Amino acid sequence: MVDGEAPGSAHLELVVGVTRLHPEDDMVGAMLSGWAKQQLGGRLSRETTVKVRAAIIGAFIEFSGLYPWAWTAAMMDEWSAHLVGERGLAKSTIRQKQGAVRVFCDYITSPYYDWPAMCEDMFGQHPIQVCHEWNTAAHLVDYEGDPGRRPFTRREIQDFLDCADDRVETARKSRRKGTLPAYRDTTMFKVMYGWGLRINELCKLEIVDLHHNPHAPELGRCGILHVRYGKASKGSPPKRRTVPTLMPWAADALLDYVEHIRPLYKPGAKNAMWLTERGSQIKTRTLTDSFDEIRDRAGLDTNLTPHCFRHSFISHLTEDGVDSRFLQEISGHRYASTTGIYTHVSGEFMNTMLANALRRVTTITEANE
Image (tube, rainbow, N blue to C red; front, side, top):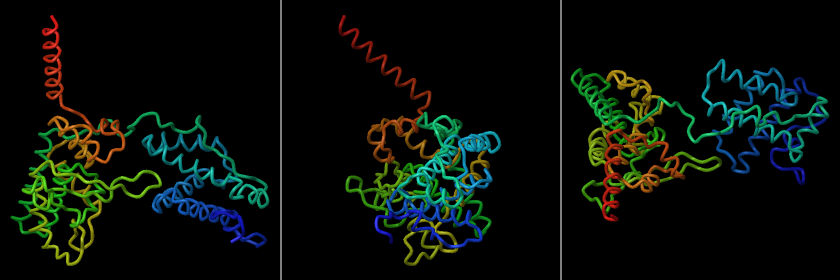
């Protein structure tokens, strides 16, 4: 390594003085390689994030038809318009793509890594920053997802789980091979709602994540759930959190699965909670497909997604009087405002709270008269 050269610098990625058949492509490859090392070396991102960002840069190169040292801000305008008008992507997705281009441009325009001088020597052009406040999507609100996404009502939760149970019973009576997967999926949905889990957190649960709660010995080994693959912040590993069992019926369903159904998959030494018939850990796509089938069979709103179980967990416990600060902690939210986004209480609950508030105000007024 050249003294003083940082990992990801141009002179470490691209040897000068060598005749190249495709110098432009070699330069882009070297830039992406150096960028990956810069991100991973500084622990700024996870490897999966680095790969996603590299794919976004490739897509922008393909759209513009030009290499990074020839990009202009106008091209970012055109690409953004394409993402909105033709592809119809959500603002959060567009912002993610623009952010990747912005960070990449920060890297290749920094004199610290020497890419500007290298491009000037080889192509007579140097890269510039093409992302600015006036041509990219600003993050103006806390939540930019589909406004149609909402929690299940309690009636919808019951209808969904009843339909899921019926699916198991139908498979059992027909003696089809799908009985075990149907039972597994039904239990997974109960656990997702019962502990307010994200789908990835759920799919990556392991047997070792079940623990006794000394304050609730009647729940057995399902008293506490240890979530080890929580949603990570930028540049950080997955967040861990501990979620106590607040819905005993969900613990009963999980314990029944662990004791009677999971052994039928012949897990051996495998720790994964949810296995396929091939012995691998279930994928989120498989569970999402199962959810869609049950939701549609139950005749429920197509805006409902697996993540709505998490909305329902927070909203329903709020209605049941569980402390909001406690819910924030067990949901893994850094800020109370995030938990607030997930909280959608029913009209009946709001009417009850209003009546209680008016009763307190009236009592205080009468006491002061």
